[in-house]
Image 1 (spheres, one colour):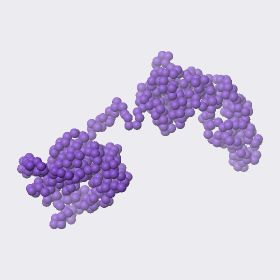
Image 2 (cartoon, rainbow, N blue to C red):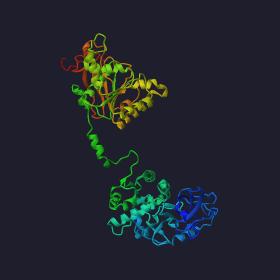
Image 3 (spheres, rainbow, N blue to C red):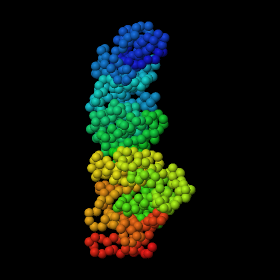
Image 4 (cartoon, rainbow, N blue to C red):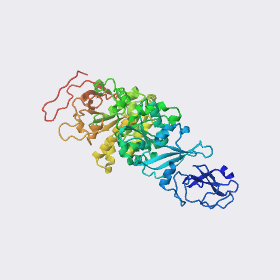
Length: 602
């Protein structure tokens, strides 16, 4: 009896030498802590018989016997090995099954009536005739009993007897095919628990809820449902009540791929239906299963009835306006919003770089955002100097402009001492992966507005990776997804095509969406497109230094057209809103006339 006090591991399951069980005698490998010798004994989980000398283990009679090698066995799993010893036929196994009684399984909260419904039997201790040693769940194929699964209470060991291969869903033999709703659980105990709760608490006289379970657990959900597909599909509605662990949720995904269209998913506050029953949450489970189970939707498909919060969030979208003096631009766009891709374009030398600096300065003053500056054709020092110039209202890049060192340092600290600005110290192009990894880094570190200047250099330097149009399509698609995913706003500089006829963009021609260089995705995927134009060779110096702002697209408002006119002050280096200057519009080649537009004197 000393052997029984030494723990060991199960290495085999063989026929019992006392009771008719064909594989309930569990063989244990044990080690004597004093001598270090290995020995074997066995216990039957059907009749509880202890066997000090299990057959086939060299008659190991004591802890002092020589070490012996076990036959191929369980090695710790719950499967049933093949033995050379005689076995019962399937018919004998099934007849043996019918000799076991049906009782209430009190330690699992299950009544005798529930067990009778599903034909679940138990084996009892030969010592007191009351203690339940195992549960026996019958399995059918074409509604004919072919085997059963036995669950040993101690150790929760589960094994099969008879033929359970390709068996129909557990419990399906108790409910006729074709009905309104079928409830499917992950295991037999959960099936019994859910049936009992629905039957007793539904308040519907005579209702027999159709509750079944998978035959072989979560990992075989797809196979089990496919094998019994005709039965499952005969119901109008299918409610999955699987375990709330990772394996159970993976099984939900597998099941939904097979049964999509009529599947509903119940969420439980405990791990499984039996836990809900044992923890006094039967009423909660009933309502979750009957009323609150949600219909399965494939990835990215949503029912609008579930989207109230999404709707409210879209209605409450915050707009961050442009400078107050840019009235027409604000009227047309209401500013910018997080989650937008904003494209800025103009002819060469038309003022877009300076205009972007004005935006940077404005949003620095009016928000508490962090900013990321990716200027691929400008040194970091030049990017910093552009902002410091705005703060000082001086063109500090010019050699004849005098700067007080203390004022210069104060202007630098105004922008950058807080750490809100981050630049990318690199001159030239970026490959796609590098670009998107940088953008994700900026977003992860709290940067909300990103200035990306410009798209053409990204594409041209890596032209060998693919055609320009295809690469722009790829980049724009990823950028459009990224701003939504990361809730950031990207200001993207894009160049224009060269004009082959008529007035050039450098002579003040207003660009259209079709003038964006590279691909139709630029106009399709940008949320807002803003163009700057000016006639750099205008006879009037004031007009030559005035840029027209045109909204080519605004998805948020749908409003487009000419917005404001911004004049570049040569002394302060600032762009100031002005009325449309007299004789501002360029002469159209072939038109024979010059447009005269005046919005008042300046």
